[in-house]
Length: 94
Image (cartoon, rainbow, N blue to C red; front, side, top):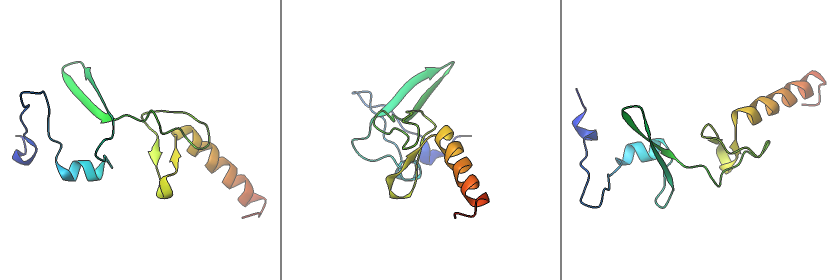
């Protein structure tokens, strides 16, 4: 059964309102670009990360995360950073 709080209609312009709690949880701000596509029989909407490259690798992926201070990191960047931090820890530099 659908949660009635999330049932929305499409207006005459094809617009859908995203509930505030979803926008906050996903850190979607007004004027953010959204990627919308079809995957089998479902419509997928997610933030478009065109301008959010990883600070370590420069990669732009849908899996990039925005950390505190606005730092953007990809899964590969996080792996490399963790590897470097662990190496420094073993050398007792941190």
